Amino acid sequence: MASLTDFRKLGDEVRNWGRWGAADELGTLNFITPEKVAQAAGLVRHGKVFPLGVDFGSSGPQGAFKFRHNPVHVMTVDGGDVTALTEYGPKWLRNSVGAEVAGFFADNPFRFNDDMIVMPLQAATQWDALSHVYYDEKLYNGFPAASVTSFGAFHCGIDKVDGKGITSRGVLLDLVKHRGADTWLPGGEPITPDELDEVAKRQGVEVGRGDIVLVRTGWWARFEEAGDGSEPYSGLDWRCAKWLHEREVAAVAADNLMVEDPVSGVEGTFLPMHMLCLRDMGLMLGEYWDLTALAADCAADGVYEFQLVAPPLRVVGAVGSPLNPIAIK
Image (cartoon, rainbow, N blue to C red; front, side, top):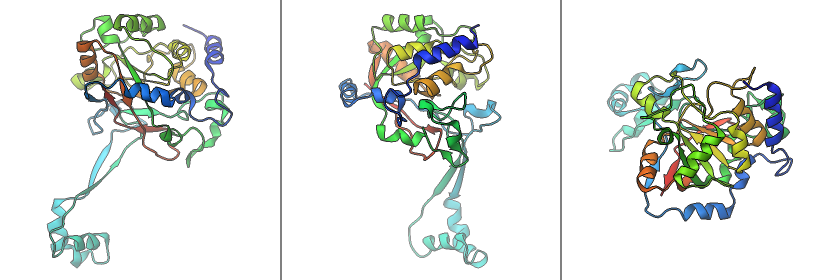
């Protein structure tokens, strides 16, 4: 077990504050240059598309958390309203929304359905914004943590990165295949930096500046099978932050719920890699990505690089965003 002193020392080593100027709110996404985007586009050779997002629904993975809930999907207008509102609405809902909607249905063939959703922005497949995690009252690049208020994040919100696009070369590191596991990696054995090197070498792929690394642990496949989001699992050891820093990776995502291993590895801390990546490095984390089909194709053709397109929603002041990332080969 490492100490807080070890943690702070690594934080000093990987910190990117000021690297792209005092006003920067993009962090390591700055590594994604136009040349990098063009390189990623050149990886598309067959036109095969792999959606990496999971379902946003009532059976999602958030049931195990008290402070987040699965999405609540509500129909606000549906087919049943046609009869109800046109026959009864004008009589007892006069001067109301119901009467107004009934007017759309009266004496013409036009019909429509409408709905809404209520959910945490990090309910399923997501990006963590740089404002999501902090310590010592500072966000990435030294912005004050107090700049995130009930009105939203004034600094490092997810809306600040949308214009960047977040499309780059994606690299899949398949830890399930590397360890010879059936479907997933149970808890108790964190993924180390040396193991990431071993996987990359075995797959014949290099990780470099501006890449987005996808780590397959099999957690999502296991969740779909068992429906238990609380089972212990293996994720990235906190020291992998240095590995990502040395390779100037733009972002990292995984098919589990926290990217990093749930066992801290640092005495007196919770999620140390989140703190190092988001707060010190300015490196965004993606969680709950479904990598199963992509991994099967990569294993079949031996190609573990692809174009990755993963823009967040432009939710002003949000500290995270849902998305449906796409890998194209």
